[in-house]
Each structure stands twice: as C-alpha cells, then as structure tokens.
Length: 385
Image: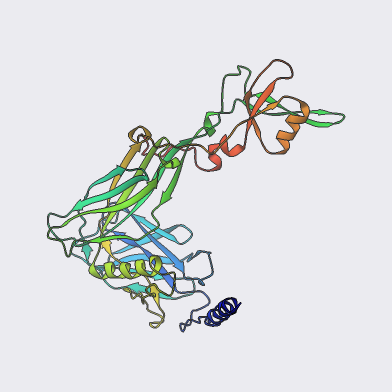
C-alpha cells in the first residue's frame, strides 16, 4: 500500500514539473519570410521558394504569393524570376559569369524589400555515380563524387524519385443500368462488343516523391576530395521497385557559410524532439530585410552550377524484392441482389467468372485497385525509357 502511495506522489510531482513554454521571440502575424533554393549558374532552372513561418502546432504551409523576385549582378545585369505556382519563382538558363558576384532581390506584396549579400559563383564537380546495394531490409543508394581540382569542399544533394506501377486488376467490364417501373437496376457490361479489350489508360501510371531531409557532406577533414555517402533507402517490398524506378540526383557546391547554416538547420529539424536533445540554434543567413533591418529572415543564398545524374533500377535487378499488392478481388454470384450490393459498396466489375450453373458469377474490385490514376498520373514522363 505504501508503494502505491509513493508511486502516486511521484506521478503528481512529475506532472507538476511541466510548465508551458512561451517563446521570447515576438513573431509577426504574417510570420517571418523563409527563402529556399539555390541560384543555378548554369543552363538549368533556378527555383526559389518563398514561404512564411507558422505556429509550432500548425501543419499548414503558407506560401508568399505575388512577390517580385530577381537576380542582380554587380555589373547591373538583371534576371527576373516568374511565379510558376504559389510561392515558387523560377527562371531558365541564367548562364552566369563566374567572375561576377550576384545577389537575390525580393519585393513582397506588403511593400517589404529583402536582399541577399552579393555571392560568388561556385563551380560544382559532376556526380561520378549513384550506386546501390540490396540487403534483407531493402535498397541502399549512395552518392559517389570527387573534385580533382579540390575547389569544392562542401556539398549538398537532393533528389526526385519516379516509379512506374500497374493496376493489380484489369477491367474488362463497366457498370450499365436499366430503368424499370421498380427503379434503376445496375448490371455489368463489357467495355466493347469484342469482349477482349480492357481500358489501357488506367492500367499503367507513375508517381513522384522528393527528398525530405537535408543531405550535406564535406571533405574538409579528408585526405582527398572524394565522397561516398548514403543518399536514400527504399524498404523491401515497396511499390517503388515493383516495375521500374528512377532517381534524379542533384549536386550543389556550397560555401562554408551555407554549409554551416544547413548544419544548424539539420540539427534543429532532425535532432530535436525531447528535453535531452540539442535545442534549436539561431539561424543566421545572408538574406536581410532592407525596409526593417531587425526583422529576421530565414535563408542563405548560394550560387553554383547544379549537376544532375539520373539512375534507373529495374525490378528484375532486385532478387526477392517481394512486392505484394494490398488489393484483393471478390467473386460474387450474378444475382440482382448481389450486383446491387456491390454497386452500393462502390465496387467495380472487372470480368466474368463462372457462367454455369446459372446465374453464374462476376469478379469485382475497389476502384483504386483498377484505376491507377486515382493515386498517380498516366502521363508517361518524357525521360522514361
């Protein structure tokens, strides 16, 4: 009994130790401006994303729309970025002069002006390869790169994944209906009179995903400028490798300041979570609010030529990948009651089953197992083989 009482006291004491944390920072109602992206000094696309900070308990992303964004050179050259979608500003083919410094200018709809420091254009070595190794848990992908000129000491990577997948169930039937005095009744009908054609437009699809962690590396403490680091991991049985998988990797050369900025951001976003973890560091970048110098801006601008490499991996390259579709098909008697029940439940008829003895059967499946466009796109990517 004394032990129970002691336990209750401890629980009460622990509960009383919790205090509500109030941040000393005064955040404006619109949030601070967040600037993400790198100016691509080469022929590729430059993407700058503008957002606003939100409350810790908010899951909403607030994009900064309608801003004027441009790159300015020390020689007074100017390159305008266009807003291609909410908060995403882009320009193609800057091909900047390596001997000139450039900066980013932002004018928001509320009249505030933001400006980065002038930044040197950095060279980026090409990616040597993206290698991979399969084990019992899945597929590990690695970045391999080096700089023989030993100019790049700090690196960052991100990637876009694309994978092809097929609908588990092929549909040869569609819902038809007949109106009677007793109401509307549904029945499966063949897509065409030949009765061998299926809808190919919903059978093959593609999905995309993007890297969501900060991937950085440095050779500053290494004897040679050569890197091999983990880049991505795909678990065994994932649909990503069910048919054909592609990963387009982008490599950036970073300044020391940008590398340190990303190190702090990585620590703040990935290492925190309890009182025993390191607490957030102040993120000081090289972008400033000109109209209000005391207003914080989250972001650090770098300029480099972005290097890219695309990798393809076939399902046949991965023994015992063991992808199993979660979809099931159901065989139901072709009675009016069964057919009406399947229609009411949202099932779709896919093919005929047993035709004797009457009334026979039909096979059904849920729409997402038939129509791949419900979870992806049936438009083949231009880079797909």
